[in-house]
Image (tube, rainbow, N blue to C red; front, side):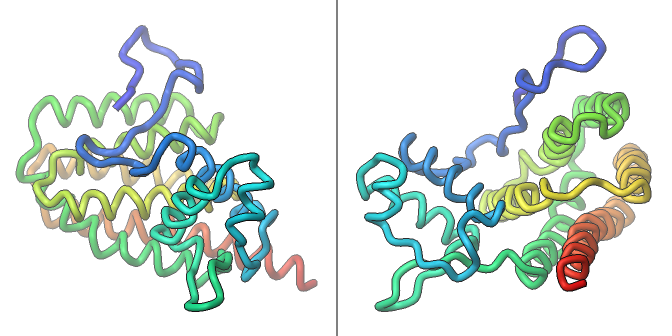
Length: 245
């Protein structure tokens, strides 16, 4: 992970970027395909590509000034994340980024992360705990002032726990689904209650790791992940209600 280890104090946002656990390719595409993936995903999340809109490979290639192969790569990546659906004889379409989509993603996290956390508690080293405490210190110092930086730090915090897990398929699934939720949640601000819960739960989690309380840590992480998912859902409901009203 590219964590700033310099003097105390906040690093520039541009100097900080959370990375996937070692051995997990974040995209698995050519550089051009990866770039298009980011652009098209952003268009879907921001609504510039509407729900159920047909995604024509040649049109996207023309729009982005590229060939069709990188577009196909990007669409396959987006299909793997659930942002794009493929229907036989009808091609690719934008999947609605709705409450069902968010619920499905975070519920998978609720199932996976307790198992990953339980293993970590039983394997954690003094260095692991020190790294969790260091990142938590940066999270508290930032105190949500820079929400992008918070997102990067929060991801780095959880990556410390999952990066060495023997089940690479589970770790990769966690990473990909977390990245989806991170992308969707960028549209919403943290409520004061959610901010307090995140800081409190991180501190409690570190305490459980120190004490070797694997079951308690697993139960806490399940509540933590569900809380994050429900926070996004509440924002989505409020936004939809405002639009309807």
